[in-house]
Amino acid sequence: MAQGAPLAGVRVIESSMLGPAEMGGLLADLGADVIKVEPPGGDYGRRMTWPIVRSQDGGSECSLLSLHINRGKRSVVLDLRRDEGVAAYLDLARHADVVIEAMRPGALAKRGLTMERLSEVNPRIVFCSISGYGATGPYRDMPSHGIAYDAWAGQVPVEVDQHGFTAMGDHPSIGIHAGPLYGALAILAAVIRARETGRGCAMEVAQSDSAAYFDWYRIETWRSYERPESEVYGNAADGGARRDPGTGGMRGGVRYQIYASSDGRVLFMASEQEFWRNFCEGVGRGDLFERWPGTTYGDHARGNLELQGILTGIFASRSTAEWVAFGDEHNTPIAPVNTPRTVMADPQFQHRFRWLPKERLDADMLLFPVKLEGDPLPEPRRAPTAGEHSEEVLGEVAGYSEERLARLRQAGVLG
Image (cartoon, rainbow, N blue to C red; front, top):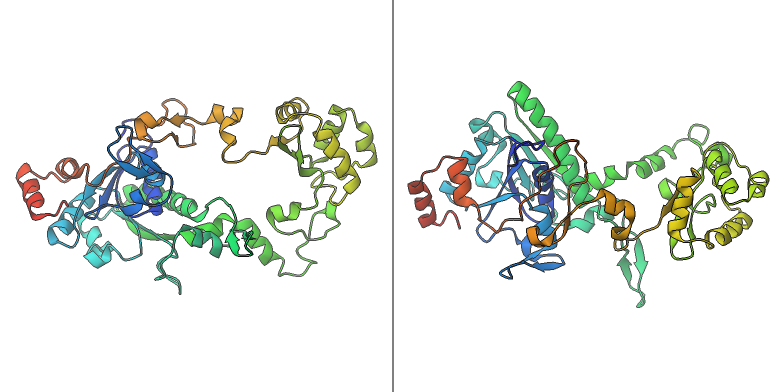
């Protein structure tokens, strides 16, 4: 736990497997003391997904996913099939602010660790369960993996490969990141209330719900389009015609569109008349503005193929870097079009992000993106091995003596 960090003094007990462990990881990045309680054998997420990274000392291997989402945590192995393991878990919860159940709902309750029992030892405890489809509904007991939440929420493009088989298209993973993010936000709100009132609470978040909510704009737009066109309609620039929701409505756009530069691609975003004028004057083509001035807001000159052809030639005449500099100089929104591989070389990325080097964490990783004035966020420790801190944590947090720890070791409770 880093002194002076935003969440210094907040202790989290996390029972997690695979990707949902990111919820505790976000809190650890902000300085919380996150204690990952694992079963004997540990979280198999260390061996799943790719890439697999060999440690800098060459002594172990671990998935990048696990290295990232478990960095900064401490690991305790407890066999919760044994009464002594459950008792030790309760002793940790007694001195914690939060318990996270990042697996199927009810997994801890099956071991006797219900919200009621946790509240008996700590009335201020905040309990948060994160799972695939949530604790209620017809899908609640279904097994699943991360892409299921995005597919369910309508965010996975379907492609046809060279053999004629359907395949999932490349896409950002939303649910496995949004679920932990929304859950962590709710946890912090609940901890604030618990410290003010002395009352904890239980909450649960589904990664599928989070994937859908993250895409609320498109989903709510389709819902709005169920109403009469006299009540819900499009922009004046489109004559009131309805566009597809979100970025789908940008198809056919000309003044808001991707164009090839001489060495890559740029996104041109002159949807406001002021920006369109600035662009035309900057490239010495005031005639384009005079001929197609557009309306004040949201006019993308949709379907104007003649203008699109002219702009295609103009943008091909300069490099991406030159167009970005042009946009800055002439107050015109122009952005480089990167990929997850090329964005690392972008000067804005290099200025804003800080790499945590592989020499410290076994893999190069990005630091938490929020910037704090004054003291920077603490650098997280490398992700722990299963049970790496069992005796340290039980002694420090629960006050266990060496004799008691020795009994737990001998009984196999610590794995």
